[in-house]
Amino acid sequence: MTRDQIILGLQRDYALRREENHRLFEQRCADACSQCPGLSDLLSARKEALMAGIRHGITAIHKNPQINATLSQTMALYNEKIAACLSSGGLSPLALQPEYTCSLCRDEGYIYEPTRHMCACFETELNRRMLDALGLTGPRSQTFEAFDEKLFSQEPVAPHGVSQRQMMLLNRNIALEYADTFPNTPIRDLLLIGQSGLGKTYLLHSIAHRLVKRGFLPLYLSAYRLFEIARKSYIDNDPEQMADIMDAPVLLLDDLGTEPLMNNITVTQLFALLNERQMAGLHTVISTNLTLTALKDRYTERVTSRLLDSRDCKQLNFMGEDIRKSLGKVGGRP
Ligand SMILES: [Zn+2]
Image 1 (tube, helix red, strand yellow):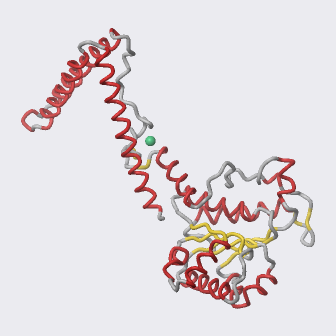
Image 2 (image 1 turned 180 degrees about the vertical axis):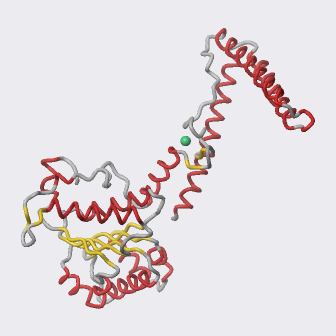
Image 3 (image 1 turned 120 degrees about the vertical axis):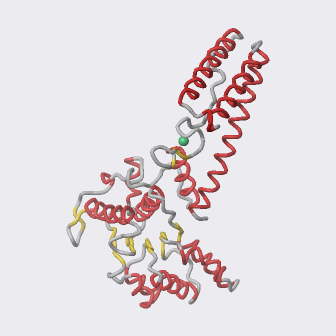
């Protein structure tokens, strides 16, 4: 699903929301009319006066500033009478104010001043749906904003003497810059490499969240899922099933190396994927628990040379202690 398709779906839902709120408003009007004698006539008269005023206003011969002033005076007068009528019937004078889920955009999803732009309500829901489409919504969102470096040890790690915290901050900054500058990133691809529990998936999710916030829809996939799709595409002899993965402007591939190895199929398909994406200049971010040697052993030199070409791919190394060990003490992911 593309971002545009998600926006279309959201616009349809906003139209339904407007209809539903209008239906509730009409219902409130009907209830109020049965409770307040004379209200129905007042509402009809106000509606009539409004329509007549608009008709006058758009007829060229009547075009003068006085008409608008007269119309708003007439409306104010009717509003006063209606409020008084509601009060005499025991209702709040504001009982017939139109109600909107979002009063800023009146449930249109867009604000038109000073120029047309998405309302915050629409944008928030759009982001949520995009993250949902990526399978990244959850009670504990893994974002740059929630990143807590204090979860990482300051003890120097051999052989470089750099602490896990320093390394993680460096990796966080590179990932953040990547997400903030896409599609004009300093380097096209990232490879996050290190044992499990060191924060690779966290940074991958953070990149996805930030890209979505900036209006891009990345494709996030576990390697397991990728090769499931690839295998099916191979068995069905239907390359079209891989099209979304081949063509995604940015692919975030998590946990490379955890998928079952299917003879030559996995290696061949990974090579085809990387090769095609690189030829098209598309961005790819991969995380793996495998060491460089293990990557070469598993996927051959041919594939790993694609992954490790420093002109196109920046390697982020993750070392130190499994962060999940400290979760019990601190109570949250990094
Ligand atoms: Zn709004």
